[in-house]
Image (cartoon, rainbow, N blue to C red; front, side, top):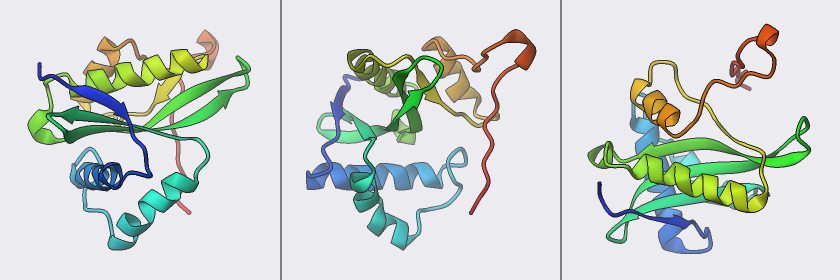
Length: 161
């Protein structure tokens, strides 16, 4: 396992801004991401949009000063628990660093922050064919969300606008 430093990104720092754009672009190109590079307008507006969003929380996995992994999160709120939660919107590790614990350490950093904030849970979504990610999430204690047995497991839906 490589020595990884987990840092909370500061989007006022240019090196953190560039790392976020580069890592999200690399993730977008992955078949388990978006299957293609980010369009130029998205690359230009990503950082301003993230800075403007009031609940943005980003962690970078750094090896020898190089950002090799990212967890883009947003703070939400659980009405059933009346407490905040953290949703991991994107979790990505550069392919050359996968399998070395970077993703696990990013998740651990998110969990530490969630506990410090008094959150009731950490949520995330995963593509059903992304078996390596599902294995890692299960090993980190994540499972399909269920609230009552008769309701079954939660599913994630989207409607493009």
